[in-house]
Image (cartoon, rainbow, N blue to C red; front, side, top):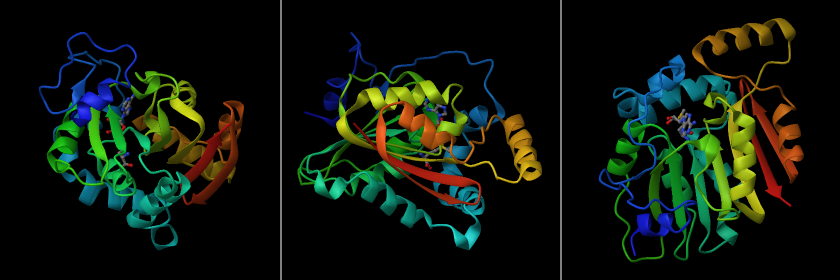
Amino acid sequence: MTALDRVLELLDPVPAEPDTSRGHLDLLGEVPRPHDTIAQRLMRSGALPKIYEHVWRPVLFGLSKGGPLGPSTAEEYTLARDWLGLAGTPGATVLDVACGPGNVTRALASGVTGGGLVVGIDASATMLGRAVADTPDRGADDSADIGYVRGDAVHLPFRDGSFDAVCCFGGLYLFDDPWTAMAGMARVLKPGGRLVLLTTRRPALPLIGDGAGALSGLAGIRMFGSSEISEALAARGFTAICRRSYGLMQFAGATLT
Ligand SMILES: C[S@@+](CC[C@H](N)C(=O)[O-])C[C@H]1O[C@@H](n2cnc3c(N)ncnc32)[C@H](O)[C@@H]1O
């Protein structure tokens, strides 16, 4: 059974004729998106995926996390694996929402043992092209299978309670409806499953916060208030919520009751 066969078993509804011709499962086809924001258009471009992982992300996320004051990319990935408890969940099924070129997906898979499965979902065909190209075929060893889906993170196409863990790094602030997306993450988690998010944080000082919010809003990036994410998680049934803030970014982790 391939990784995509395993992913198909988690879908709801299961497509009658699944399109896997580009190495990922495509649930969106050719949909026109006339109202995309500047940020969304960039994510769908052919150019960004080529430089995203090694140039764009380290520079922009690095600055947003407060430069040397914030965690490195490697530390971010360790935090995700730790907060999701992957080491203690052999055979875990993990969802990486807004997976882009699969950088976080592969980092999560490196923490999953015992025949687990890591599924990356993203709406951008160009990002997923890169993800497939950069993800080596898995051998018949102990490491996790990795499968990619082209789909909408706001309306997750998976069965209820399919995943032990869900990660969404660098995605929530781009979604047109982040709260429906968060409710979907809760829905696809098993009871006791864990969620980890990396998203934006609006500075507390009103003038700076309003300025940053207005500027980022023009590009289609939402800035979340310091307690907005924790409160939204609690309202959707999450407990044991922890949060760490660095510059304009915040990490949040939580467990579904
Ligand atoms: C900044 S990248 C994040 C990649 C990776 N998770 C990381 O942390 O580096 C954001 C990704 O979100 C995806 N995205 C934005 N809106 C989406 C949606 N509604 N459904 C699925 N993916 C979406 C974009 O296509 C893009 O690949």
